[in-house]
Length: 279
Image 1 (cartoon, rainbow, N blue to C red):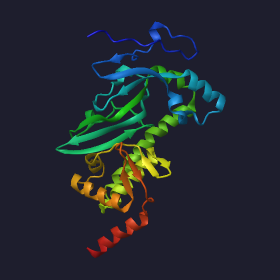
Image 2 (cartoon, rainbow, N blue to C red):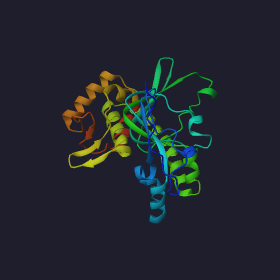
Image 3 (cartoon, one colour):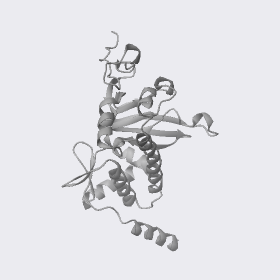
Image 4 (cartoon, rainbow, N blue to C red):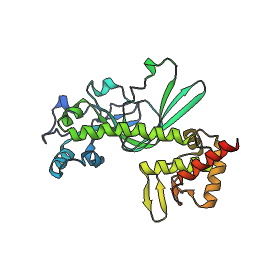
């Protein structure tokens, strides 16, 4: 096979062409990993990261700050190691698409969805220090782009505390979202559990349309079942009931649309309390 085709040099932060030693080391097509690697202007792709800056400063950062990125096709994914990004690297920022991180042990598994805006440090999975053995698998569910916030990117942004704070907030938010997903799994009724999951996903990635709130994720029944700790047949039957009542429907492209209102959490709580009293 021929050698990878190197892309044009990346512009440096002062607007000049980067020297050979500072050019992107990832801006190639890597046939072994099946990932197209190219430069990207991070703050153009994710402008929320500079929303706390004055317009002039934000404009300069959006123009000058460039990072390498990976375009990932659907299927299993092996993230880059920390050594590939450098010792001072921040991590990987998901710009679009959808991935999953699944923890497995003794035949059991617990998945987490990762999408646009999430900050990852996949090399810190805790397995090396865990008393209980487990495996971690990453999978691309929908073609995704991740920016490599490497040592060079960290040097470019280290003097902008507002950006650092936003990135730290992303890591904390990911923990909060996962905690709420785990709480949903404790809801007893299947309908309520599924509807709560989709409103939870809508809060993260949904968009409002005249027909309802679109959740632009192509989730299979199996994936939904794993996210909320249910059996797949139960999920499939419940989704059919929700479609008949007009609360949730699947679009032709495999994404989903919420056509009803968010569930009343107080009613869900009251049903749980009533069930305990009856028992």
